Image 1: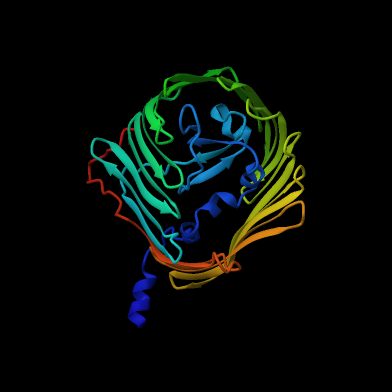
Image 2: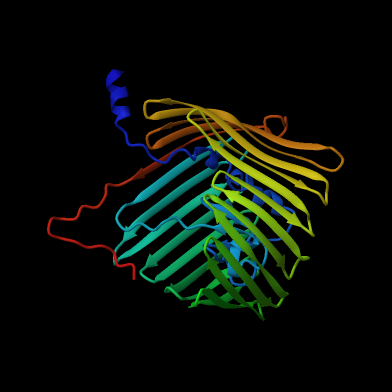
Length: 412
């Protein structure tokens, strides 16, 4: 037993602390001020700041890494709306990273995850992912070689769609073409391009996209102008599309780790509104005025024995309150860690009626493994269910460069 404990203590520490996400991925995005304040409004979808599809929108599908961005953060292609930004994992040039997760559920909400990030021949790299989250299955394949990239993604379940895109990018110019289907009867070939140009202290951005949706040609053109003046950034954007005109912009000012921002937006699909926000790595305070007036905040906390996050939003127009929270208490054991705690989402409408969902999570992380279980919908007799499973994260050894040899992948 002593020998086993000694061997365990020699295992490398790996990134297994995100084990609760696989139990229910919607909490990764839902426990944030920006998500709660945008729930009753139209939102857009981006992938690394670019439109997920050139014309149209994809459903809110679960993803490994996502962020909710306000109109100013979303930038040139954000349409003046809050946007879900699907983030790409870093491309590997020397290591292979893999992650496997299997979660069994007693009410047909089983989940699985397979990720592989690795270098490929010819100075190229690939990120691959297959996953199922409750009732939707997702496949993703991203390939990159120097300035070229290729992406295939599909999702199937309550929503159906797939697409393939290829592109080329430099410091100032980006071109992308592709084909997608957002429903069984939908077909849309597309072309998108953007150009950035520095003019004195200003950054000028121009972009255009066109897609043939069935037999109709649809397009959009965007323009943006921004400038960094000391610790302040000012930006304005304009879009013209078949849906109409939109314009938005604002001012940001940073003091140490705190960013103060004020913005306005007049999207083509909504009434004009304004936002004021205060942001910090550990908390966010976000407000919206004029249309769908709301105030939201979130805070993240983590100490040796406790970690968690809480978000709350009050909508003044509907006189309703919504909140999302999770809290884990933990204790270390050699290279392992036991954690347990609640996860709760709740809301109160204008009549005072309470709607809540309570889960209890238990997990044990050891080196590259995490073992976890949960009782979901604990207070609902009909919907109550159990989940349990394992996540495994591993990587190969770093590449070794022989003596008197030097070399690296050309990023140009």
